[in-house]
Length: 136
Image (cartoon, rainbow, N blue to C red; front, side, top):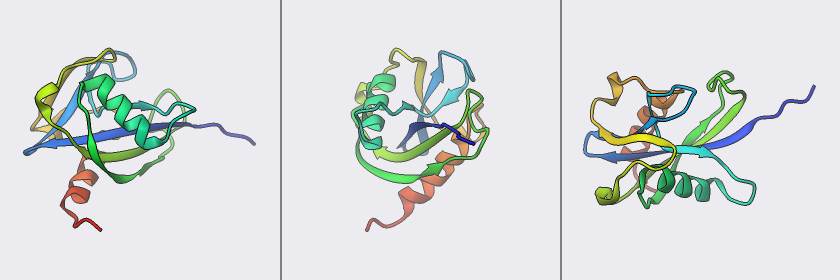
């Protein structure tokens, strides 16, 4: 048997006790909050995809990317088999604005109780641990 899966990225940017989230403009999970992210293009690294997707969806230029983890649970995306590489990054939030793929973007302080798409609550929770860990 042969299975295909798509490679995606997700980016966590914290601001105080909140996380930068987009409100999804398109299905699946239309109207739900989600991390900025998307599909990795054929000619880019996961880091480049993370930088590009975050800029496209939030207007933020991110830096200091740190790996949070790889998320590959079958069924995590209703569109099919997706494997996401998640990063936590820093950004100056002065340019925060919703891009083409986002209905809105905001710093959501109560993300733990928000309606989040996919497995993004787990990714944010894991990113908090990564952020608090000492750098190598």
